[in-house]
Image (cartoon, rainbow, N blue to C red; front, side):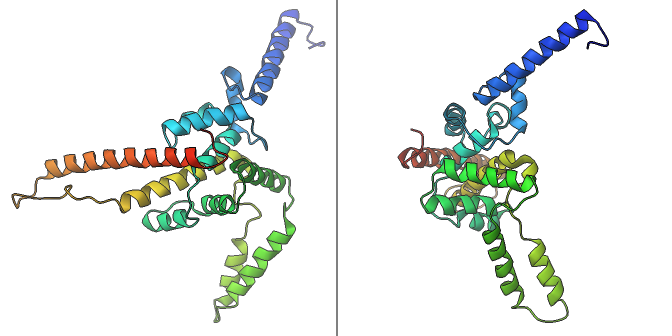
Length: 258
């Protein structure tokens, strides 16, 4: 700027600098309005109470997730709120849902297991994001856990014999990850996986909800329009029931927002 010696340009650059710093300060406080919205692409290893509460309000309104979680809220805070909302008892529920429709069940299952062990949603979500940040820096966050994974993979590979056993062993070893998240976008990845986990619970709920009356054919003739209408009514009613059950579960679990 000194070499160019253009006062007008210097003032415009200075104004942009002030706006950028102000946006960073706003994002740090959880306010992602205006230019601060850029922060939705970052993975901060911390979450403030205000954006967590805002994300929880979005999830209370729509437990299966909404666009606002990805465009208006700090993704780490949104992931914490999603962990709070996913507080269901069975730790294998998401893996069961994967049998119905393919989804990323490993991360949601890990979160459910840690919640079941007594960890808080905040601790689980933030620690996973912090571990991913360590991996992004080129280090292994928990060497002992990583070695245990290698040992388990070796034991699993030892069960197989034959000409392809070495290939199977290498495949198992290559499948080991020091973090279940994408280190380049850990917060968003965790948020997406947790919402997929909630969606998996919805799939199971829908799968085992009685459909009596949906496919009845009293006249002995197929009426596709009537069947479609009946199914749409059943689907809407079942989804309302599921949303309300998720809200009730979140309200009655210690440590969750009211």
